[in-house]
Image (cartoon, rainbow, N blue to C red; front, side):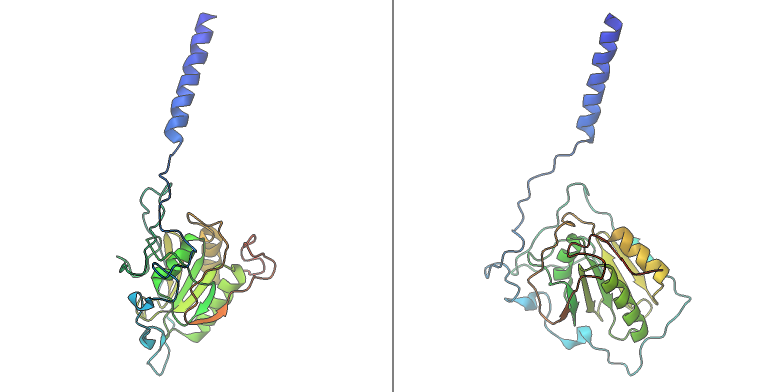
Length: 248
C-alpha cells in the first residue's frame, strides 16, 4: 500500500513538472495599440512618405513586352525562423520611425499599427501589408511587367480563396525570374508561372496563421486602393472556409 501511495505521489509530481515545462508564459502585450487612428503616431494619412515616396516606379512596367513564362523555373517556398514563435508579437512602429527589413519579402517583422484595407492596390509598402499578414492574410505581390495571364490566374485563385487578402504590384521586391509571390505568416512562395496545384495547397496550409489570425476587422490604410476585397462565394466574412469553390 505504501509503495502504491509513493508511486502515485511520484507520478503526480512528474506530471506537474512536465505540465509546467510545457506551459508557456508570454510577456504582456505592451505594443503601440493597433487599429487606433492617432495623428501623433499613425492615422494612415500622415507622413506616408516615410514608407513610400509615392513614385509610380513601384507599380509601373516600362517595358513594351511582359516577362516571358519559363516553365523550367521552379517555384520556391521559403520559411523564416520566427524568434520565440509561441510568444512573438511583431512590434508596432509609429510613423516617425523608419522601418527596414533584412529580406526583400518579409514575412513576420514589425510594422505600422494600422493595416491595409483588404483588397487590391496599385502599391502597398510592406510596413502596411505585414500587419495584414499578422492577421492571417495572404498577400499577393506581382511585378508590373509579369505576364498578365499569370497575374490574372493568380488573382482569381487568391480572391476565390480568402477575403483577407492584399494584392499589389511591386517592381522593387520581385525579379524577372520569379515575378509573382504569395506571402503568409513566416513563409513566402515566389513563382515564374502559376501552378494551381501549388497555389491552392499553399493558401490552404498557411492562410489564417499568425498571432492575430482570428482578427477579421477591416483595416484603415487605403492609399492607392483599387477595389476592396469581397467574401469568396461559399465562405464568410471571417473566412470560415478557405477556397470553397476553387479546385486544383
